[in-house]
Amino acid sequence: MDEGQEIKSLKKALNALTFMNQEGHTTVSSLAAAIGVPRTTAFRLLETLASEGYIEKSPHSRYYRLTSQVLRLSSGFQEESHLIEAAAPKLTRLGKEVGWSLSLSTPLASEMVVRLTTNFNTAMVLDRFAVGYRVPILYTTTGLCFLALCSEAERTAVLELARQSKDPRQQLVHDEVRLKAILSRIRERGFSVIEHPEYREGNVGVPLTIDGRVVGGIVMRYIKSAMRLEKMLSYYVPLLKELSHDVQSECEVRLTDHSGRRPAAMRGVLTEPDYREWLDLH
Image (cartoon, rainbow, N blue to C red; front, side, top):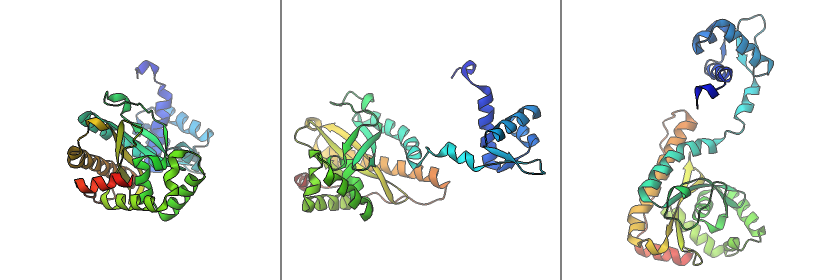
């Protein structure tokens, strides 16, 4: 942004809140020194923030401290925000490398919602879907990956919603034996493939977990006539798993403040006979 367009007083206030969040409390002199403003400016910043309820001055003291009102500033910044920030550059980088469209989706009720996509950065795509696009959870690889690895309570609730849906793309919910076999295969192999006969594109997806809990998935869309099975198994699936692992690792670092926990190991790759059997299940 051009410096002439910046609101400098707002930047100073944000710097003040950042400093106080790190220190817990401050005095006028300490804040002035920390953010590089005159004492008079620091005093006005603190008094303005106090008048809006974000900080308060301790009685009979020189110290100002944060109030619970600052939590309102982060109410919309949840785990998903960390996930998207961690994934965006990695998804873009791999998308450029492989050429196919990559998307990250997370569950919402009985649907998967596209949160991040490279759809508009490649020519190797037949249909373009923007961020916010929704797909029935049982109709997409990321949805099946989520259902395979989520808790029993989550799976039960989602499938009940899918049963109530009139969308024909949720019809798999009524074939419990087949659905159970598909989810079991995903847990065993670590990825899902769907090639709906009515579309020229196929999808291969991998789950995305944070701290051992599945939060969504990453899918690569490809043109079926241009994809060789051998390359799918030996090249693209491992790349997607590696991408999921990298996103998981960075997101965990962001969320746990460098706790040092090791991400879960990624699963192996299907052989060609396994893959043929997998497609038969679908």
